[in-house]
Length: 487
Image (cartoon, rainbow, N blue to C red; front, side, top):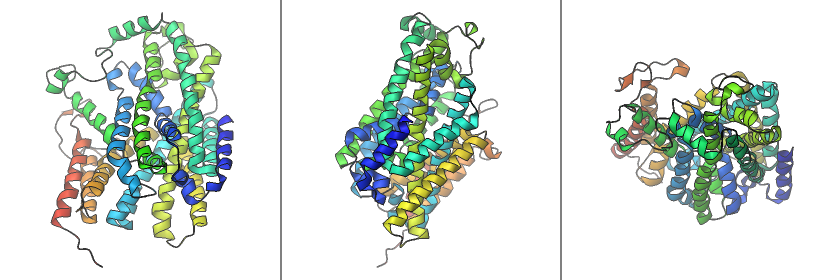
């Protein structure tokens, strides 16, 4: 209810800015400090917090596989250094406008598809995680948990657009900091304090507190890693470079009140994103050191549920409630941003140029609000009905990395890139990515990539290989088949 009121307050406070640009980009006058808050809160979602604790707690993975904190941090920093100023200086409304300007409306509409689907499945995956967490811990109805959270996020996003999202992100980030921050001392105290917790963790995990693999792992002389180092590297590059071409990121860049502000909010947002992983890491460490046989569960929980169970079993009830409230705040801070981003691309890059080129600003505003409602309902429906939402989102993240990242780089930095090269890049990237197989669609690997393990599957970094080949295809085809400009 607090979040809903803040969203309503923001929509009324900024009611004079309710043009389509006001809804989409906060009138391009977002202060830097709010921009940093909303950038951080958007990335530090429920999946980020729960996933980081899961990786730290999972005996098969450990801290070295908790790649999201520093991966996303580097993604935001690199985005600020190489993309933020360049895209904002052109005065675009979405990052898909880069492709529309370079390749035309139809090619941009093709590239908008993986971006849109990625945002929709991200929203659905986060809502599903929240529903499962609350249904398990509080024995609440799964559908009710998802519907209430989704309704609140959709409601205030429709009212105030990016202003409502940004203002609520500030409050949600404070909830996350307070809710998780005060739970850590109680959880660590259960296992003898921070020093005891760190000693237990270091003894039980091979890589201990190493954030990165050893040099011997990269040189191939560490038998504990073997070919899995290439899987680690593949996913690290996916997080770093594949985290850039998302509208949810560029929406904040384009809403900033200056080019310098766009760079600052990216860099400082990246630093804050990494720092916000610290509570989740400590919760994972506390879960490793706790004697779960003495808990109400009787056995250690699954890695995916370690964060809520640490809060429930290792902290007082009021602290547990605040911690789980922080998880709910983290979920909504990502869901509202993702739904708005998807609605922005649908309206600005599909409805406006292709369906109704002569539409008025009022029609664009109405379309944005209807798109927020429609995409919100679709995301909620997916969260309620699909068992493999996370798998679908992972696939979309792959496609954003393999298809959209090379397209964005070439469209911005290669003057001779054209739509023929863009289409070639799309085809090559998708073909090579699915050549590694896709269990969701029951597609077996049909390209004989090396390093195939009978248990772990293909360990060759075929996602990064596909991305590089896509980029090279854009370059070569654009040079071989130039398009003459006509007056």
